[in-house]
Image 1 (spheres, rainbow, N blue to C red):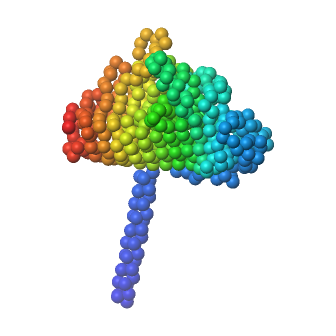
Image 2 (cartoon, one colour):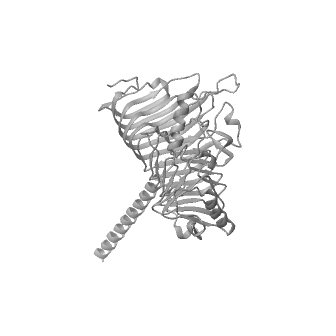
Image 3 (cartoon, rainbow, N blue to C red):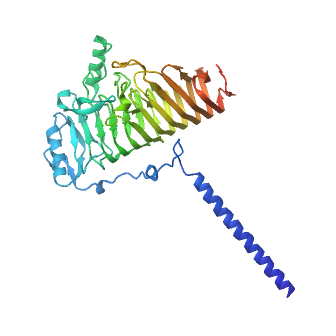
Length: 464
């Protein structure tokens, strides 16, 4: 009886131990899962929407309107703006559907998509912009941080919630004639503005929610390539965005301009353009922050798993920007980009660039961090004082790459304040200038920063 009691006690004890182990493991997994919950730089959780990246399916877009079934000719030599617009209007009037571009090249001026319409471009199909600016409508629009009359883009979706562009085809801006004209004008008048040389953008989407662009090639834009204005929940997935650096440079051909937007995901894209790859806009001018109707912040922007070719910068704040909050650039490769992170500090515009994280980056770049006054087309518009700007809570971490210049930063206390920057877990090979002038930043943290195989400390350092 005694031995049975002992056996019972041992079994009871073992069960109790196992129960405790299972509970402990479950608790540990719960804690691990909770700790792994992704957050933005300011600590707020990243919504699940950023992980829901299923590509829209053609069959889910409603009735298909193949443009060649509705009077559009498969002829690459004639402008067919009116004919293609008629197909869009017909789809809208009949309750919506997808405008289907088949194989072939179709020339057009500005097209305006309506609610419940979409654009699908078949593989080997091309929607190509006219190289005659008179084929593009002059409308009330947004450019360079201003609301003004200017030319519409080739593809426009204004107030089109749920708008999508998909397929494996191309939207070609046909920009060569515009680029040549721009550089010719600059020879005659070196101070001419970007807007004075009349050019259309490639894609402009404004005042729209739940937008997805996927799969297509966006190329040879005369001006900005993809411009998002006052949009929410926009995904740009698996895009190939290109404009040349030679033999003729494509001026102001930014890959993606994000302008007063919330929740934007750029994922698995290739970008190589003759300007900034991803530029955060939002307003320009000495009182830009007071125009709440037209200007504002970019919030919750994630750029991940992308590859960059030649470009002026992988991520740029500015130059027409007033507030950027919760910005993440991660898991990307740069192939000879000019800058990794560029903070353009306009002395004529109040700016606040905060809670920015750049992490898990590889490749080669000219300047690792670039932050200097940006005075192109400087205009205080009669304001007597200089609007003061800020950039804070900027973290660059877990990065292994090569660069020419590590810290390309100018201290300008009369114009802006830089604070709470962190360099953490960096392994950098610097070819020319590895100096870090920490007095440019208030509360600059350096943790496990290796430069040319030297661990550096918080002081002014110069490894060459």
